[in-house]
Image 1 (cartoon, helix red, strand yellow):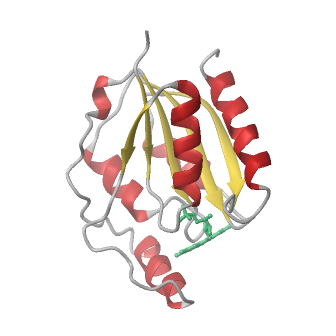
Image 2: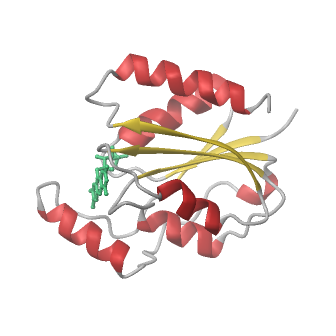
Length: 161
Ligand SMILES: Cc1cc2nc3c(=O)[nH]c(=O)nc-3n(C[C@H](O)[C@H](O)[C@H](O)COP(=O)(O)O)c2cc1C
């Protein structure tokens, strides 16, 4: 059986909901990326702090990984969209874990404008086979069960590709 890993970062829980749903549905292990010094603000200031990290291409230190991503055949990689791209924790991940020859499916949670997030992720993942991509829009507060069902159907489809 192929080994499957769901790797994700989530600041406010939306991406976590989707990651957990995928992992349960396809029997995957989970690796949650956690930054050592997490943003504290949940008000408007979070956009300033988070946005600045994106613009600066920051690579925040992340806690030691409890799974070894290179040991898996297929990975689902998920992120919230920050400033129209993937989150800084993912930048740290991409720069420290070199994946190649893997099958990878991408997912994100956003407020409705992801722009080129998936293209930016693909550029970081050259040398792998990208199976597909799926966007959710803040599933904790919008059509939670509908979005969860659709992402689960998509994830199962990815494994048949
Ligand atoms: C710093 C920051 C920047 C964001 N930038 C965008 C953006 O460019 N486009 C968008 O659609 N949503 C943006 N959002 C909203 C998040 O992508 C959205 O709320 C997402 O569901 C959060 O996922 P999470 O709960 O897993 O952290 C931003 C949120 C934060 C905190």
